[in-house]
Amino acid sequence: MPKNRTYDECYFLNYAACADLQLYEIGKQACPPSYSYGPTVRNHYIFHYLFEGKGILKLNGKQYTITAHQGFLISPNILAYYEADPTEPWNYAWVHLDGPKIRDYFQKCGLSSEQPVFKPSLDSNEIDLIMLQLLEHNTRELYCIGKIYELFDAMIAQSVTKEPANIDIRLTYIKKIIDYITIKFSEPIHMNDIAHACGLERSYMTRLFKDATGQTPYAYLNIYRIKKACQLLLHDSASIQNIAYAVGYSDAFTFSKAFKRQVGVSPSEYRGKSI
DNA sequence: TCGGGTGGTTGGGCATGTAG
DNA sequence: CTACATGCCCAACCACCCGA
View 1: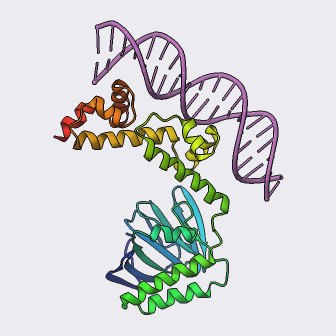
View 2 (view 1 turned 180 degrees about the horizontal axis):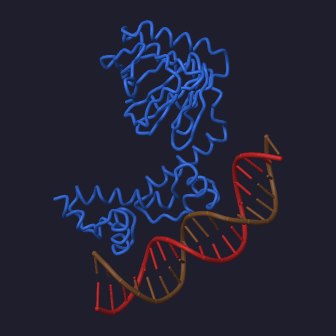
View 3 (view 1 turned 90 degrees about the horizontal axis):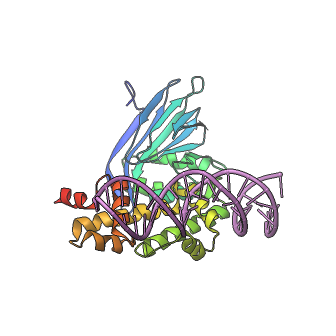
């Protein structure tokens, strides 16, 4: 928390919630010049929207400049720092929210921890109005939940960072690869098999997958197998050799080495520690 | 279960082709 | 021109096998 933080107006909702949305807090603040917040990590989503002024956001080692009638998203468990401009400090509103579908809703707006800045493509009056209504009626919890959905709808309609079709295609390939691995992990899998199943050339598939996930399909497969093996070691009395077979290794020795490399202890030690 | 040797497989760089 | 897709190549890595 910043020193002596004062809110122009902030309302903590007593867990206003519906099936897929929890709304924790709504607030607004006209920040003094160079007013900063963080670095901080949150355990839910925070969306800020600027009525006036500008400032910077630092996230994942990147810096973004945000100006009036734009917004920015801070995702859970991401280290964030933001600071008002020294000459034109921002006047913004924020909402703290979470829920099983919130990530999807923000993604539909083109927002994620990689793309945290919302830039409306059309007249921003609609978003301004929704945010002002939220602030005005911040004690009416069900009204606010309704307005949050309206906000998402408006942001989706006005997003200029919609993912191009080819991104969707790539995501489809990634999903196919993951699906294949999760279904076939217990069988001997070659990368060519996965590539063939997805209709891709192997090296291109590897590159595609690594770009999206940060790890190769082969690494993902091994991690998945060892995770499954951990579950079996804890909840099943089968021999280590049988567990090795069950998660797709044709050889218990190879499994044991791979397990120790990833977990740090041998399979038998892992089982022994859990008892 | 571990360590070492060996052969096969994988990842990734690079050049090139293709489509919009 | 750009982004996507493919093919080739080779160093590095991994699975497998064997002995301890």
